[in-house]
Length: 391
Image (cartoon, rainbow, N blue to C red; front, top):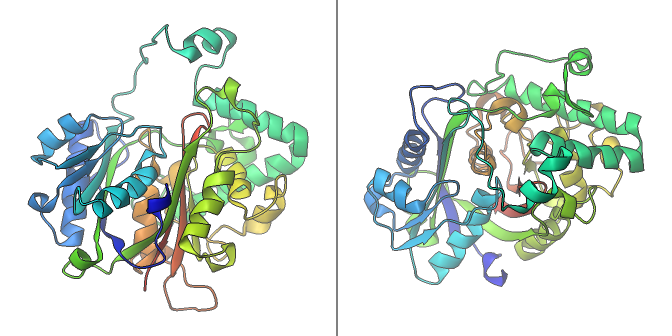
């Protein structure tokens, strides 16, 4: 998508927020989480729902979402490719705004993922129903653990296990600094990680994302409109998207995600390099997702992820801040998580992260200037990467 990049500051994120309550919220529907998050993001931006003329969501029809919110959009996008969808929506919003289809784009997500848990109806005509379910590949924990097992085979079981532990423990430490995180008051040691119960080998419970009730929303608009908004604009410098399979059995290489393509493209379109990145936000549906994405994005070479994250490098106080809100592993994950990556990146760039605030490289008091955000969807199927920056 050539139009999704700009080294100029012409498109910005001007509002971000979550829903009012997160975690286990049995008295609220998915649409209520949508509505609360949207209301809060508009309040953050100093805008009203009457300003919104572009609506983007996934998992719910934009028809139902717009009706519930009382919005009559002139542009609507229901692209749904898993949890990466909301990161991809940023690029789609850029394209729509530049084409003149809308001026104020609302990206919203809400899901009562925990309170409405139940058996998922199976469509016998889907490829997974025919070619995977009969053989035990029955959902994300099994699919991702199979991919991780292949990674262990290629790069070493012990090294990989240490890397997964580093990611789980460091992410929990970030959650312990975030009052909104489900695991805010629940620390975890390395021993507790290794002693936790198995879910699907080689995954322990802390290797797997939470299942929560929550919502998040992001407001994207023009530079001109951003001048009158309440908060400092967060500029979108570059973006890329892609997917290379649907079901896990059709993934060409279980140890390499499509981030290997979207990451370099987004960086090139933004005109920045890995060394320019102050903050990295990576979708962590599983610890393995983080590990393989770090390699795919080019922060290290294939098989070198264990060395890259060693020594709690990605934890508070480390030199590579990663998933500073506590991630899908320890903060929230209602079923699709990409919108929350953008919320945290924007807050960090604006210096609004409180006890977990990180700083620009080489400084001890300035907030980050550039953040890379990467969402993953499906069975390691889709990826959206965006590069964000402040002035």
